[in-house]
Figure 1 (cartoon, rainbow, N blue to C red):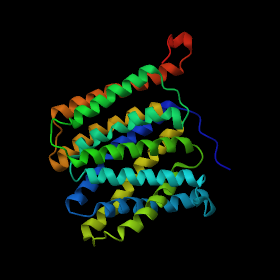
Figure 2: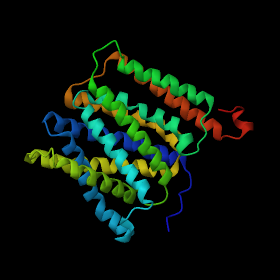
Figure 3: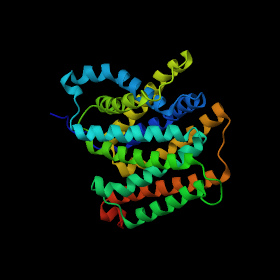
Figure 4: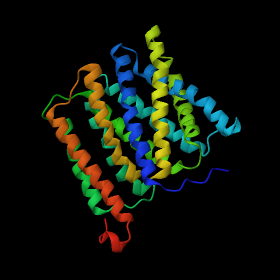
Length: 301
């Protein structure tokens, strides 16, 4: 029998989400380092998921035993694994063409898509004002990409695809939150992704160096910690509230990209990200107002 869903505690969810956003950019640093060493993208994704599976296996085993390692509901965990695998693949691929901060800036379409799809997938109400914020947010994304004003970079399309894939992953995560321990849920996702990438990596395998073998488990460790925190965050707060907090990752991404690779976003990227963050904050605000009693909020979203 699945555990009872935790009581909604938005503040705890916010803290957990912010912690995850501070950790995950270092996953991008390791992935970009491996990509610059010409390690095949499929191999990098395989390492992230396979070692993530190995790291979470003993913890999941201890929590639920052997029988509990079979995911329930199976199809939901399978879909989460597929979309996380897709998001990881396209994001790591984008890093071969773009700096970390630029890739992440375009990837930030993800919270907007979460807000757009939450009424369909989660039954959450999104009012007119938040729909307007989503539209303005997409304008911010266009400012970052600037189609027609700069040479097309394939990394932009890959980052957009990665953001869309992760948005669906986030929504599926919300649907199963509270049904299993966060580490067990993370383990199930890693298993599905590992099975997919193990089949694919056979055709692209390139023998890693000793340094690369040492970096492979680091991918799994950082990802496991970050995504476990996200799963726990969704146990305590709604998707439409937590989604905008993903923008906090940009701060650490800029710092990491500058420190490790000497990359720094141009002014238009900052303008676009500023618009996205403003829209995300407004969406979060409208979500909170919607939950207040009419006598307190005085309006409807």
